[in-house]
Length: 246
Image (cartoon, rainbow, N blue to C red; front, side, top):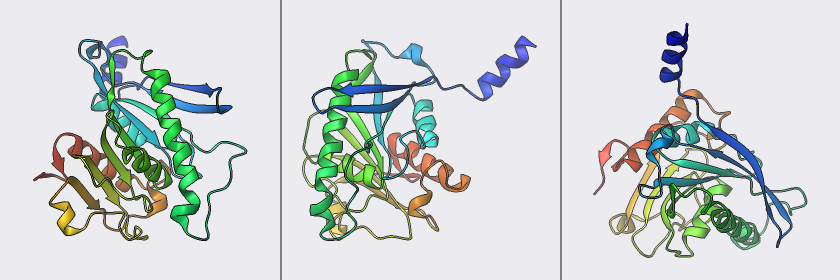
């Protein structure tokens, strides 16, 4: 019986995860996070640090409803920190007017939250590299991630967005970029790279056929979650949707 249980665990690894609330006293914000560890935590040490990804959810979607992404990254050796950005009492996200202008305070607040969480966790998780962060975000969470990446900080290494639509991808430095696109809503003009810019940056833009913006969560169809996970894993292994990057 013990041998059978071991075989089941090996075939279906249990991902160690922890929900906690981290208090930002300066801003009086109690920030829920879910921290999930890589499958083989024994390989992560101060001398051999494992990679870290910060995961930001879409507006109105709970921070812990992207487990298919966390699980894929955990299998690839990442520590994943899923972060709740919208808290009770926060102003609603603007839906009228110039959305870039009206929503910028939300993105600034989110970027500050990402920096705060990094500062809080970096010393606690010494076996992980918080100086080469991968930022992952869906929809408004992708806008938040892009906003922080555009600040040009030296600890942001890779940006992965799922159908974000408002904040332009980075246009400076040598960013490592993956943007997965749905087919029901276009991005605003200038958010994605032009054909000329694609040749300039290390970017991978992948549109998944018949995919919907609101389905890119744990509530979406299995085929879409599998396609997103495969695309992410291919990208972090150095390929763009199965093809070698230029």
